[in-house]
Picture 1: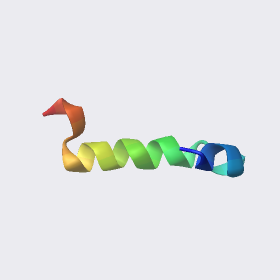
Picture 2: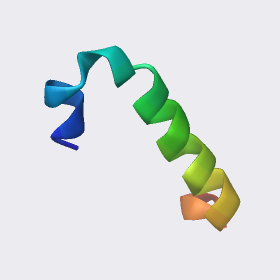
Picture 3: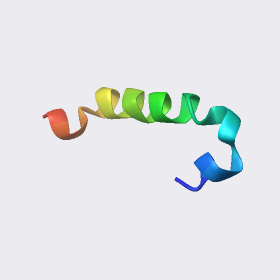
Length: 30
């Protein structure tokens, strides 16, 4: 996730998007 370094303003939004993606796909929860 090199985007965190290049986009510090999205540091908050990035993990949230990742979390949403994990929940949508089921992630390791399934």
